[in-house]
Length: 248
Ligand code: SF4
Ligand code: SF4
Ligand code: SF4
Image 1 (cartoon, protein in one colour):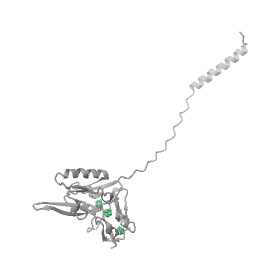
Image 2 (cartoon, protein in one colour):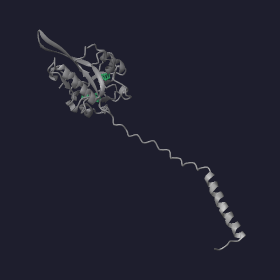
Image 3 (cartoon, helix red, strand yellow):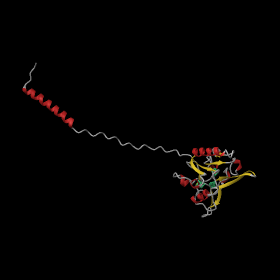
Image 4 (cartoon, helix red, strand yellow):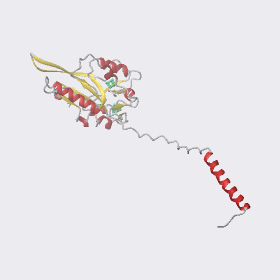
């Protein structure tokens, strides 16, 4: 067994001591701060698909009080002699079993809208929610839209301030619905005959109403599911569409 000198012993001891001190120092050293996680970029929002909306007119609930028509004139600042909502009245049966029926006559907001196709100045266009809107300032009152509308809706009349011919028709209260609001006629109806919501929901509601109505009115029907590739104004009718002068 080899022996070591005092000098060698001191050298070994001091190296070992330094190593121990270094280890101790490492053990007591404050931990390095954890690496900060990078701040996540906010996920890009997928643009939402616009939901197809509809007005629903349940004519079986209408008591013809004209509240919707007046609210519409007020909301859209119409001259007192202009209106976007009119009514057709129909009597069916024979005395003494006569029934009186009413149907709202206003823009049906055709999904395939011939008025949009013919307007020479693009004053009519389809909005994201499926309604047919009018750029009133752009309209030149030529009447081309009136000549192709299957429901005889547009009315050409003089604008009171300028005397210029303009086309008047329901624009689905674009200024309200664009911010998620509800058209004035739907918020005003005293019997909830007018409703507004996603097209599918309105169609289902109309079908449920018709199912209930058929116990008393066997010819009750939903109007607007297929006409013009689907209408933005759905109707609940108590009698066949052929009974009404402006339905096709
Ligand atoms: S009902 Fe007449 S005015 Fe309304 S969208 Fe249809 S074609 Fe145009
Ligand atoms: S009346 Fe107005 S909205 Fe109708 S087709 Fe002429 S310019 Fe277009
Ligand atoms: S949706 Fe607006 S513009 Fe159209 S009939 Fe109703 S209140 Fe009038």
